[in-house]
Image (spheres, each protein chain N blue to C red):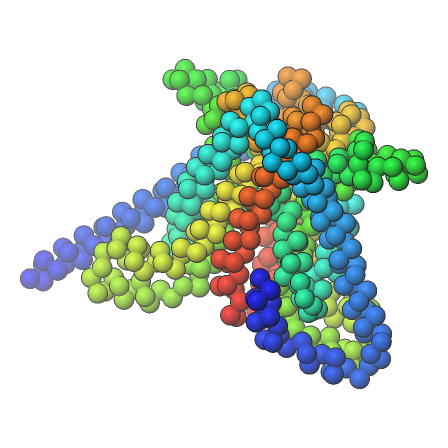
Length: 293
Length: 282
């Protein structure tokens, strides 16, 4: 990381700045230092200190605290369930997200703009409302829910409900990372492959997909990280049955209200560490593409 | 010969139409099942009981207070994250110092943290035995189970939005116009309000709309720090959660539908700001 900083620094046109203004130097510097310290103070107090508190509380006791957290009732199952669900959501939305991005950028059909706007709805809708919507649609009082239950399909208070809630919440992520790549892509390559006799599938696999790979992986990882941490959309739908439909974020909430902050912090710090690493990977994957502009 | 190429071309077109139709159909299907159906579901569930249910929700003092509290928290969050978000964006875009990338990563941290963990962090800092608890207790300031902690967690969660919209705009903008304004004798403040701010205004509004949507829908973090005292520390989302806990499903559906409608309006605003920004760039 520091090597990155060193190599990047000379590219920046900044060094010219101090010489540029004959204006009162001290005033300029005062402003700059003021802004810088204000930004540091804001991020430090608001983000760094609270997270440090969680990590310190969670990992303060070393391995013992982690072991203690995992020995909480249903903790292991909750972590496994959360990671399984997040993985499934990432894979499904990576596939459908790519499909949606492709159709929305390449095809012209009535209703395209409306459809494109709908992709963003999960970003805007409160996550708890997502859960409420699923209960309204698939709950025992709705005709669809009653029909499904009669045929042995359980959505509410079951893993399927968690899956649908997480699919909804993470829908925009892959679409919005793949779409810009498709828009930028030169279509001549595809047309060349087609006119050279490659079939549709071969063209997509050999020509289009390699360009999209970084975007799909980045979007999928974002979806995974988001699904790991989701609370609002899951809490109403899942029913929180210990060992069955209790996810890690809901477990953390229960541990806090049950006066077990150490265990909550240990599990929280584990989740947070995992998703933070994923976000860093994503920034690498997407940042590289945007830089050369 | 001619006839054969024609049939081949025709079938080629038919295949293309089939592929287009199939993929477009799959897209409609996925969005229909995943997004449209639940929206219809909640609309039906909230409207079926009729107007009396709506009237009883809107005359319920707890529900009114919940809406009001959500508005207060959202307003305070927007002010803080917009003002300080522009400061952070200015520093990230204009300032060069060792560790700049680290600061940029810190801005993104809230996206990686579960809201529940954010709530826990504030409990650990301000709750009993917390790092800052003695000082605030000595000064008689109630943080946990009160408004300050609820605003605090909401700000934490909303930090990235304004910064992430404004910083790239500032970088793209460059400093030429600002330097021109400075050489012409404008003070730093005048330069910011007359030159910089007008250039970033659509991006800033976009960030504010995202912040608003996120702030009024926050549940996980607020649930943990608020204690959910009805009529006191209960936001609109917490009201919905309690309604379902107490089997008052209709009230829950009504409030949830209003929140959904507000966020869809915000989404429309976001689309407008986005197209304005694109038009500004030309």
